Length: 191
Length: 191
Image 1 (cartoon, rainbow over the protein chains, first blue to last red):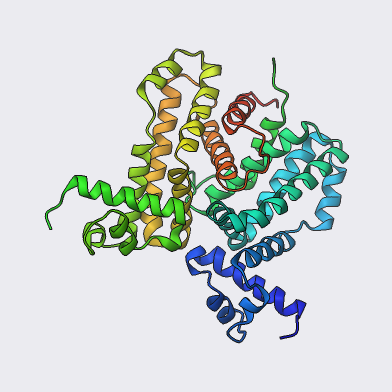
Image 2 (cartoon, rainbow over the protein chains, first blue to last red):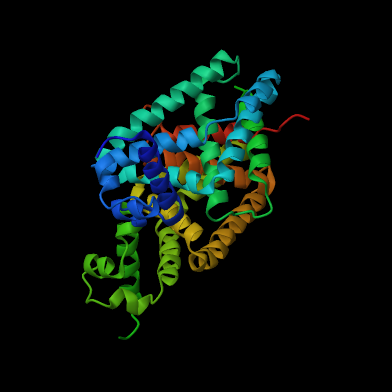
């Protein structure tokens, strides 16, 4: 079979849909071929190992979740204090619009905890993403450095995990919660 | 088969171990019987539905993760400001000592997002837990009310998800991170 980037992307998208919607139990090469409407063997041809498939899925998820440049330009105009809340709120906003993708990212992390092969490919990818976020944060002149960026990651992940599974407070708006929580986290802490 | 609470608890523990260690893909009635060293059919006898099994697992996980009364007494003596950080840090401390249980709790939430039956039993159980936490928080005279308790939940879950899967900053100590983040979150936010 000749490598075909469009086909490869279709396979990856189908795999993400299965993982996000039905969990790791349902993610088999066969199920991916079937959802992508490809001949049997296509998925395992592009991705011979589960780790290779999961890495492509992580890359594909981040591509699909990329921010809208117009929104980034808008956030660039905001003063530093508001920008930080704005970025955190915008991440949550993007992910809750794509709940299957957001759940698939949690599933990918859980798979990494169970499989050293998956951890070996996913860990450098996710850490590189964090470094890029820290670099952006600093180049934008935002306060708090790498520690605050990491705390915002944890907070956003916790808010999303709640909202996308069993919302503990069904009345709360996760985007507004992220905004308020980011404002609190960004405050200087006294001695 | 006569109902036997000890046997039921053994089955539940085996199910939690499978879910936390190998993910939802591996959690079958047959695998639970096998790990619990019970005759085939035992798990499905106690828990005819997956939802019933998962609810028992959630209850069992929280029982196994219950705080040590001596540590709670110690935290009761701390001033309100320090107590809040102390509680958040102690939750993280308990859960990272039981990584399989902590991962199983994430898996249980993901299952609830995929299955209305599971959501129907898990949601009231988890919300009741939150209400108990808010009541404790208020009776203890801690600041911030239900909103802060919920933010602390999100934060702790995000820290744990990171630490137990793909730690983005391998040098950081999740207990210390929880303590610092709780201190920041608990600050009053200006107008």
